[in-house]
Image (cartoon, rainbow over all chains, first blue to last red; front, side):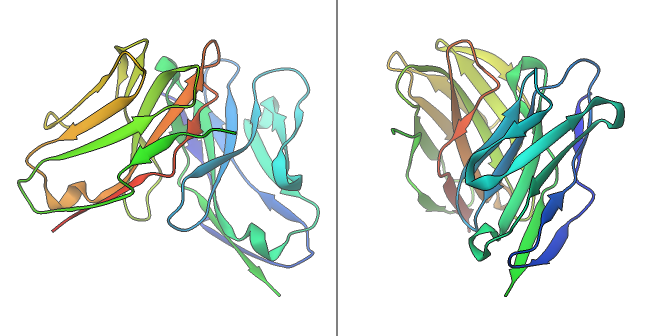
Length: 112
Length: 113
């Protein structure tokens, strides 16, 4: 069965520092991969997606992610974090039946 | 741009009561998904509909039912509510031919007391 692992429950970075959130997936074929962001009490906003093609994917808000098949990873990166980026980030894989299977999430804290 | 609309945004019910959550997908999106997110948990898939037919079913209790109507809006009906049903319920919709590209609504926060 498809699964997603986000090994970091919490991450704290300083404002202006770079960010990398880790995501590993388990899927037999070429996966459809997503990153969503959720602010407290809010819905899930799609940051970026990977379906095929270029393995470096650009998203909104200055985020990017790189698909690495050899490592079964889809890590999210941002070169310079802003205080408004503090939120919870979910990695997801498209599973059979078109549903999304989410990781447990990573809570990002930004310190000034 | 139009987004997924969910109503109500907040709902408080007592145990054993019923609740109905509504979802209005983005225009021209023909597929609707329901997810449940418990406190501190990741969203879990409940059920989905494509062209008004159930297309997939996840960990949805038998006490819950859902349907999609001719205008593509969907309703999630929950009966005999339990304390453990307290959660954030998300609806997502996806456009024709791109079912994995799901756009989420703001969610309905259900509190069962």
